[in-house]
Length: 60
Image (cartoon, rainbow, N blue to C red; front, side, top):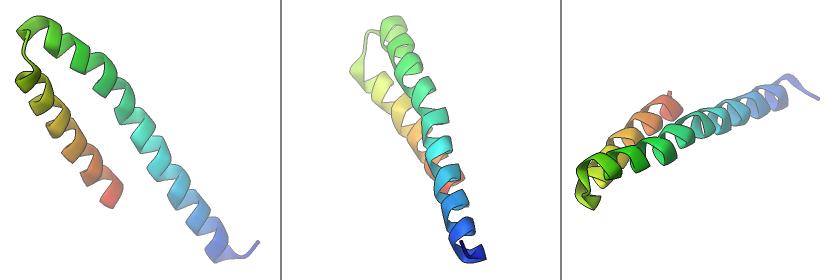
């Protein structure tokens, strides 16, 4: 494999790893926020903040 192919594969692997890393808090944290607030609005705000944070990490 060439150097550029290895770089591309490692970049994709890093992005997938970050998405998995943020997926766990999204599922668990979303349930906790909904349980504590009993509101889908609060849960969606939490999910949006977490999503934008994950996109910020992925875009780097």
